[in-house]
Length: 450
Image 1 (cartoon, helix red, strand yellow):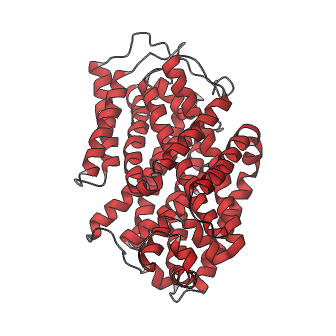
Image 2 (cartoon, rainbow, N blue to C red):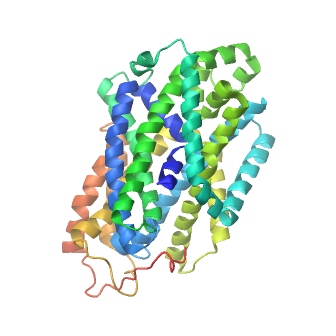
Image 3 (tube, rainbow, N blue to C red):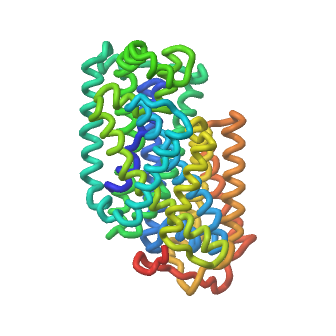
């Protein structure tokens, strides 16, 4: 649970938590968080149970339940897009926070230095320091929660707004329609919830029981969708006056933020430079907290991303790349995403993420619980391609994305999940039937090559 809750306690999640309460209003944002926590916790528990039974990571589990050996390349693409996207987002937030701390300007040289150092640290820690990160995960998580709560308390003490006034704050921005705003923030939170459900499976394979799988899944969901949303809301709303005053008194710092007016710069900082809030409120301690929040998550992101790349290469070539090459490749992909301005496309990223990850989780759940009726896979190897699963996931992802992007409904992730749950069993049972003796190997955490 410290892994799943730890990977959720990051700058990007604080930014998302603050953003949803700005768009929909604080109470509506918290309500959205509670609903998505229930949804995400249940989804993570179901997918995690299948991984627990199989003893495999999420992308490898998809080989045996839903997609097939080569078909699981689709799962690897979705998972890699997801986890490496978060690696890129959080690197970008650290970059802007570091610039803000030292008063540096964003330029190519600073980008090469800061991103280069960050990338080297994540690679080294993932290869040589994973055990240290695992053993200190609970300490880092507690440190993050304690320091963030303290920071929220300090921000509240220095704010002209009371806690009651903050909780009663209405939307700032959004689309003008209360229910549309609510649907939009549910969709934003669901992107992270679907991602976390797949991450749950990576750790569920080591659980002692399915009850423990539930603990890690529900605990992570509560952290990412409720606790971080509340903390993000309090920190951003309570410190708005302090941030505005700081930028007014420091023209150089204001000039380094995007926007014409101070209000626009403050708004931009919520999603693009959340670390600056930590620094303005807590100074050097806030800067340290910013990195404490990220180290554990970035190493876990790199680890999970490397697993997805290993499965991707194995599915395409039949050969398993080395752990080091997969870790390096994952960080290179994250750097390319940063160059493509993924931070500026956060809303679209979360929307696509929610649709694709819930579709993938849905096909694993549908195969194990509906088609197989909870019967574990057996045999020697997975069938090459489970076309029922591949086509179901692709169709559901496309439909859900189109409905979301065209404004028909912000709940594209829910549409994609329902489509997969209904369509996959029909295709698997009546159209693309399983081989009479489908050879499927179930590995264990000790024998899995990744």
